[in-house]
Image (cartoon, rainbow, N blue to C red; front, side):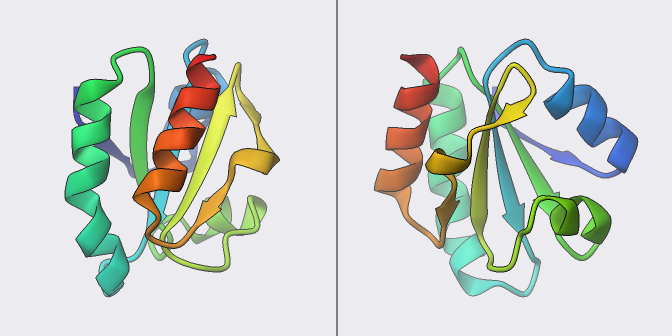
Length: 108
């Protein structure tokens, strides 16, 4: 399955907000060391959890989307179900265990 990068606000609306499937969005920055370290783990999760879509958003390219969601730290993982952000699942920082628990909660 893999992690797909979203490059426009319209694409974010289409793939995340209008999705009927659970979605995990990795908000990252190219200069962010922890983002690069956790990226292979998130790719692995995307291949192991077929019922969830995984996307990534570069906060510098899509700063309006990041600002709208209150992203202040990278990486931040935001979870969506039926297009709605599930605030209590948001994970800030490179926390693979937290992301896995969030994915499990989406699928529950």
